[in-house]
Structure formats: C-alpha cells, structure tokens
Length: 530
Ligand SMILES: O=C1C[C@@](O)(C(=O)O)C[C@@H](O)[C@@H]1O
Image (cartoon, rainbow, N blue to C red; front, side, top):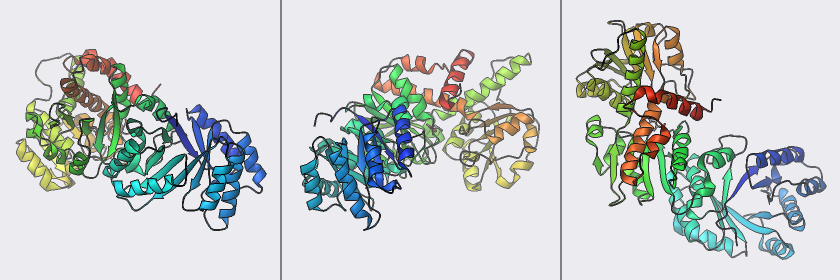
C-alpha cells in the first residue's frame, strides 16, 4: 500500500445519534483529523437507512466499525459492514472474534474501493513479540488489507514489542497500546513506521490518546521519522507536565529532529533496561523518581550526586552511558533570589550578596525536589528548616544540609521570627487536588516570600493565600522554565546543539532581568493565556 509513510490521524466517534455523529465528524475535521472511525454500534437507530444516510453524507474519509455487544447484535453488525462495503466507505473494520470466515470472504469479494481492516483486542497485559507476531499472521491470513491490534498494556515497557512489530511487519499495521501507559504507542508510532495514529476529540484527555489538536500543534507527528530522537519526562503522575509544550517548540525552532513526550513510568530501572538505544536520547525526571533515577545513571554530576537526586538524564551518544544532572537546584534558588532582589530594588537596597543568606528557609517536602531546594538554600547561606510527612526523611535531609527537621504537625505553628522564606516541594495542592494547601493562611503571615514548586495549577491555593497576606510569591513556573533551560543546556553539550536552544528558550539565568519578559512569554504559552 502506498500510504505507509503518509501519516493519517484519526479519531474514534462514539455517539448516540447519527446527527450527533455527523456534527462530531465536522468537529474532527476542524481539529485536523484526516479520517474518523464511526463506531456504528454506539448509535441508536431504528432503521439501517439512517446509517446509510450518515455514511453517504460523511464529510471525512471514514472507517466503519461495529462491535456487537451480544449475539443478537451480530446480525446488525454484518448488515452494517456489508452496507459500508457497498457504499465504498474507505475502510471497513471487521472484528476477528465476531466475523466468521464465510462473512469475511463475502466482504472481501464484494468490496471495490474499500480496504478491509481486520482487528483484534489483545488483553491480559505483557504482550510478547511472539504473541503479537502469531496474532498478526493469523489476522493477515484472512486476506486483510490492514491489520489492527488494540493491546492492553500493564507497563510502558510493554509498548516496546508493539514498536518492534510496527517496524518489522510487512502488512500495513495499526497498533495501539490502550490506557495511559500506552500513550507513547501513538506519539512515537510514526518513528516506527506507523501510518495510522489515533487522537482524541475536543481537547479531551482520553487515556492513551493524545488530543488531535496536540498531535498537530504540539507534537507535529507528521515530521516524526525513524531518525527522530526521543526525549521525555519520566514521572508518575505525568499528565500535569508542561514539558512537551516547552521542549517540542524549542526543538522545532532550532531545526532539531527530536520529540519530547510524557513517559508514565512505574519502574525507572526497567524503563532504562528496555528503552536502551541511543535514540532515547534524554530525559527529565519528575515525581517520584528523582532519587531512584540516580541509581540508574552510569555517571552523576557532582552537584546531583551530593543532592542525591537527578532531574535530567542525557544518554551520551559515544558510549550510550546515562549521565545524570540536577537542574532543579539552581532553578529554584535563582527564581527566589530574583524575586527578593526585585523586591529589595523597589525598597531601595540592592546588593550582590544572595538575598537568601542568613534567612530562615522553611522547606516542606523532603523528596527529590525538596532535596535540591534544601541544598540550594544551604549553598546560599540560609538556615534550613525541614518539614516532611515522614519525619525520618526530613531528619536525613536536615543532617545533609546542617539544618533542622521538625515534626510535620508543627508546621502551622512555626513562627520563631518574621520575614522567613517558605518553599513547598511537596505535591500538596497539585491538580486534581488543587483545593489543598500545605500551610494555613494564618501561618503565612510570618513569611516574606512564598515559593511553590507545584506549577499545575499555575496559581496554587498556597500562592493565592500568600499573596492575600502580603507575601512576595514565586510560582513553580519560574522554576519549571529555568530547570528546563538547564535540561536544554546539558542536551546541547551532548547533541552538539549550539546556543540557539538557549536563545529560543530566551532565558539567561546569569542575567535575570533581561530574561523576565521571555519568561512571561513562555508562561503565557504554556498556560495558553492570551
Ligand atoms: O520538577 C520538574 C518538573 C517536571 O517533572 C515536569 O513536570 O515536567 C520535569 C522535571 O525535570 C523537573 O525537575
């Protein structure tokens, strides 16, 4: 078939009425879909003529599918599939489990322009290459023009055999790993020769499916090819990350053939074992993996080593070794310093000494991000006090930065002096639990500045309440963009990208005031603020 490398983006329409389906088809077209899968079994219709009308009026090339929900529906299924073939619908999808050889043969012989897709659902997780291969051979033996597999995956690593099949199968193959952990089967599919990619309609996040709009605008999958280098954020959860919105445009501006994707990882070590080739070139590391990731690296930068957490990993092309860095530390501390300097400037006393020096720096959270912030604050001469739900972790971190650990229950009463700095490095307040806050509004009155590492939502409850009591607030987006620049800088070293990435991101950590307006531009872009 001629279209193997011409990417077609489709979306699946499940609607109650033919009218609604026609309207959704229109919407799918507006959002950039090349074709739609019409799930006729989702429709309520009294007569087949309504389906006929819908198919004749279709405004996009279509796949007609029908999944019978019980044995009585089987008759309707066969009737609809035959109708679709008669009407020359572009693709007619036949479920291998329901359609017998005889009907299959009839559909094949009656079609003129329709292509027949024979599909199967692979359940039970852990799809081995052998299992997938046998299934493909079986489906192909029906004489199908296209074979389609929807595969249940338990872990992101289960997607690797799917990529292997996409690369090595001769018959045109549509493969989709279902669920959140299967998302990369769609985003990276084109790298492995996939020619059909499924997206979700209406900006909706459907598990395992990228929104149609982000396929076109963020990932630009039509440019992904076998040489595309893969980057991504390893995290769990990962859906909140704005990394793809920031790194993908940066790649394009610099003409670099790379893609940056969310990687929902349960076990970092296993992830690196399976995705071990040079094409998987660099990673951001998010919660809760920043400490475990240190143990996966072959070399760790001295700063990251002392912190005990990495948030950036680069695969060195010359020997495929993983090199870990920590860009959170400088990102957070410089964001706080800049805000304090700005405040001092308006109060008339600017100075070169870090404005954090000598301050009481209260840190909530002793995980990977907390560790980086504690080390950063200590490096600037702050007195660090740590609160963490698990007291033992707070104590261990306090010992590492010559600070003090206090029981979490005392956080709201802690007020030894006024004008302290508060940094939240816990996930409290992150979407979807954005009504939560780690520190009460009353307690915030003792702080001169409040920083929140949580950046989704942008204006957390903690920051809103801190602003209401008159504190200077620094949002997590300041840290997020700065750590991403750190990612880019480490990437430049190994991918021979020149200063352009820095230019594109537009932030020069050494010259904070010049960077401010670019930061705001990125903030607008990331949160899609007009
Ligand atoms: O903390 C963060 C944010 C992040 O996890 C993200 O959401 O993209 C990426 C990490 O590298 C970084 O340290």
